[in-house]
Length: 101
Image (tube, rainbow, N blue to C red; front, side, top):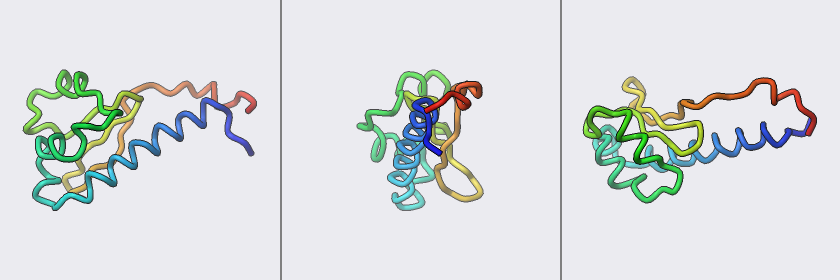
C-alpha cells in the first residue's frame, strides 16, 4: 500500500525529529540532561528548530524539557530514560489518511 502525500509528509516530519533525537542522545548524559546545553551544543543550528515557539512555551530554557520544531513535532526529555524523544504539538487531520495516493 502506497502512502498518500499527507501520510508521507507526516512520516518525513517524524523521521527528521527522530534524527534530531539521535543527535541529541549522543551527547554525554550530563549534557543531554541539561536543556540549555542541548540547545547550545546540539540543536542551535538545526533548521527544523522553532526557537521562538520553544522560548514562548518554556518559562525558562534552563529548565525546559521540550524543544519545539517548525513542523508539528518537537523533542521532549524523558526523565526516566534520560533521553530525548519526539512528541507531537500540532494537529493531524485523520480524514486525510483515507485519501488515495
